[in-house]
Length: 167
Image 1 (tube, rainbow, N blue to C red):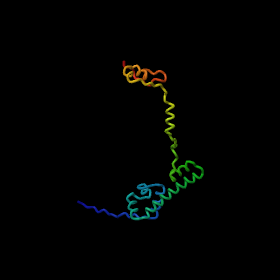
Image 2: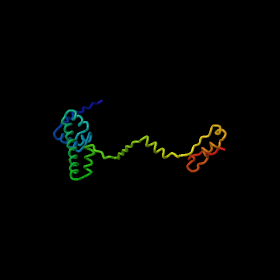
Image 3: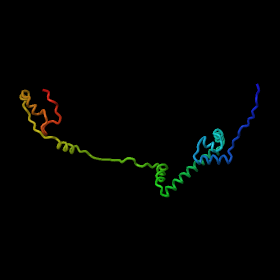
Image 4: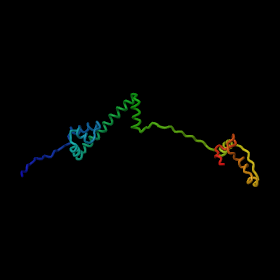
């Protein structure tokens, strides 16, 4: 069995000025994670290792993001200042948390008077005649009960809903 010797030289990645500038530019355009690393000319593993050991890498990324956000905000603000209503509305919505009303509130405050309700109910009551029969006539005379509750409605005196006659 033959053993081959492979020369191994660890790749030393340093945060040079050119690399920090590339990281800054990629972050300024909104790239994140692996896309940022690749655009900066590094593999994702190299970028993570470099960011772990050098705090300037994180600072370059944060500065790039802040500058990119500033440029977009300034462009939008300038457009709103020049009269672009959509740009102004977007600034209100996203920067200031403004929300247009989507509904109309209808509040009706009305007080109900018991006396007034009784008076209105009294006007709706149908006045009718009621005669009371002595108890001995009520047992003998079933026609009196039929007169009090007719089988059919006749004008305003009868019930609105009458069950069918059963006999």
